Image 1 (cartoon, protein in one colour):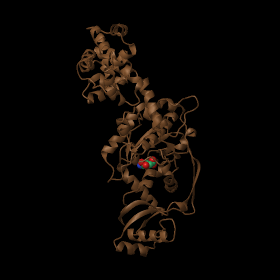
Image 2: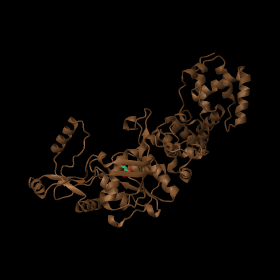
Image 3: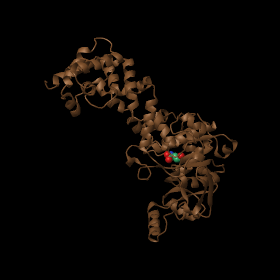
Length: 499
Ligand code: GLU
């Protein structure tokens, strides 16, 4: 268990040179590509600095948080290879610490109860709208007299707790990605709610900005690395650090991930969960490599294909772009192809086997032989873009294909049947080697009196049911080993029009 440290006792660890970063996902959905990319940058920075990468599950939204989403997030991070240090902190278990911080702010007069009802707030906003003013809380309950408070409580009104925001404040920080940042207190929407509405003698559920500050202090976070959609929160949070008397961490706001139209990538764009990418056949190595490139440029000479460890050696914020990063499917596909092409056949086999087994293939007979399967991977590997392509392209090796139209037309060519019959006669009962296959083709060409090209195309049509596909001789050797070449030729000859 983590020891709870009273907030005032903690000073910033940033000054002491320890790097401690965190990912703080809310378990209200599956692991999103944006959160995963934030995780990648946090991980790279922590590992580069020899620091720690921590997790905090922000499950305070009780209605929308679900344990299965936490499981999906942790599984996704693990699958991506983003290992974290220590047990994840569970935010909902820290509610007393959050309430204590609110009590401290109330005691110091830096926060107060606001009794304004929802209706009153709604009419305040309508009024602002009618006057073309930006909607904001007008701080109306900041200075209530004792009598007013008594009157509201006597009415039985509930209250939220608000943190005072000085409209004259200027909030500045040096963002490690975006450089000097400045916010006016008057642009923060008035005094901020830090605890939900509750009976006036209680402290309601503490809210995001307060809770994040208290927990980041508790976890001694030195650098907060998160999406640029949190910039306005950072301004509010810096005021809370100040009010609580603790030094704030440093901040780095990463660029957003954009879709093809240049808008923030969202659920509407279809595939956004790490588990979706996995199901589509993207490998861990390609996805994590691609996410590293989403907003970060590797140093000259490093190329674009690298592993996490390699990136961690050189990662810094100077090479993170400020502009949004457009999601580029072509690049992801290219990287995925590179990863698959580099995999040793035995490893590709490990990855493909579950997919083949899901089709009911590779379970028994000659196609269950690991060596045969690895050879199939040697043959198919160079043409794969996604792992699932290794299912489609392997079909003709596990199941007898029905020839497509082009293949049927090929098999009907004059001389095709004679050539195939000449091949069939020469297929050995036992092992077929590459030189033997070449010799059979040469002999059959002469015996049937046809061109070699015609024979090759016809043999491909008969064996694979298509005129496209991997190397013919290698395919034939594999089909011979699984005992499929002979019956396929017999079948093709039986179907061929009689000469
Ligand atoms: N739970 C917040 C989110 O998922 C965390 C934001 C932060 O990193 O402070 O957006």
